[in-house]
Image (tube, rainbow, N blue to C red; front, side, top):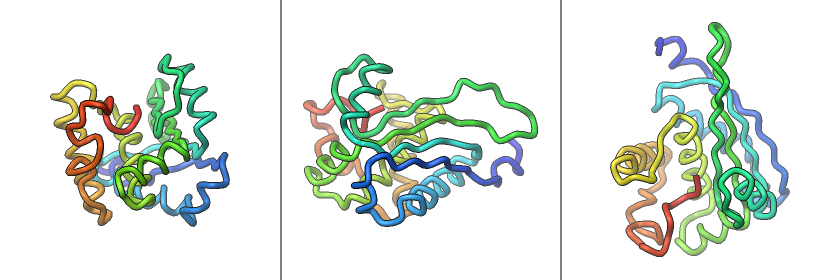
Length: 175
């Protein structure tokens, strides 16, 4: 990737489908700040869409795309569009579900903005091809999440909480 592309801006198409997300304040600014830091760390640029929605819509999306009839906190849909020289690369879509994200933050006793920041980074890394299903892949993805969050002033999300080695939790944030 060229240095010019690595330094180019990340463009967000953000939609707040559930007004409860406004409890975070300026959701656009939060997403731009968090994902801007992630893009700089990952030396990537492009365009992506972010949907801040609710559990009902997340359940439909999770069922349709993953075959799981339940809501989840974050889903990522990497783009399969080819790169067009001279045009920003479309990276894909990330969707976040309000109720599950809030409940998880409360259960883990984490500030909601910090948890949402983690979910945004998690989803973004999925768009870039990172995964955590296999242990060897998680050993690459999770430290990246932790590093980016630390740069934003948030603690390591894997150091404590229900998905830090808890066998009852599938795989941390949803995919």
